[in-house]
Image 1 (cartoon, rainbow, N blue to C red):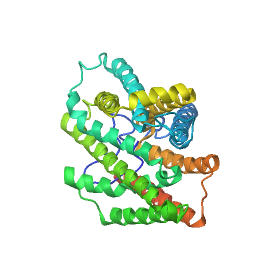
Image 2 (tube, rainbow, N blue to C red):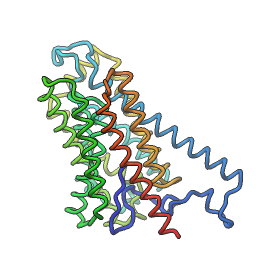
Image 3 (cartoon, rainbow, N blue to C red):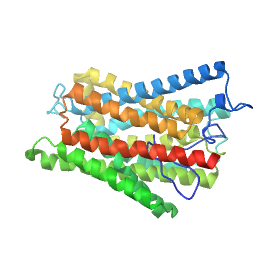
Image 4 (cartoon, helix red, strand yellow):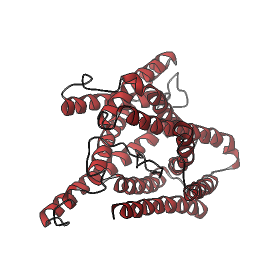
Length: 365
């Protein structure tokens, strides 16, 4: 999921596409008719597809976000290895997500290409660097919830436009217009205002600093992931590597890394002990893994059917809803200053979406 889209000298590559589809042409099948207008039946079918994608993304990622916070912030029955009652392993959360994702990816690739690896142009090792960064970004995201609230985490993620631009410059030599630097600055200001205003007390400064450090790690690793994925698409050809093959390649390496991390870190005995004392936590992890996998499938479907701009609008809306749900269910206090910071961030994000849409309209004309 990549809610921020950057304009570069190259064509839009913020969201990976598979085969040639309406998403690449920024139009949907129902609108692609000889007379330029779809029939009522076409419009109705398109509206149903949009409702399906919108609902699927919202349900998947709102549930995923809620379960994340529930797992990492709830005090459960204490165990000898987890005397504070907190779930002891963020690495296992990443592992469970990757375990189900690789199963879904194998099925999808098998259905689409007739074989799991025989028709893959890109070798699995090509995905290893972004698999490592993807694993570390997910681990940092889970770990940060021990120290910062979910609303702070969600708003903080929006500032990844800056490391995205840095990674693009370093890895691909991409140049960006001044307007995007201004947008990045405004988002950073909004995130800073929201984070400072959401701080509960001075005594929490050290703890929250650790949480923000984890969030910085998440953003940097996540930005490297998207840039490396783009390098794979460019090197091996977008026609030869579709999103499902990318999903398979990344998760194949990631499952090896997370398994090794669990073994080396000695987390497996702690997790088994914790699940025996708190069986509901295992159910929470299963739900998180399922919604993570369905969310990825809805991402690819939405982009293919409606394009990256519509997808970005849906996911930005989802972020706002998830902040509201988290504040209500977990009792996070939202001050007026925090709301101002959030308004600045999401205002810039929606401005980006509008600018992107107008730019595509001008190119199509």
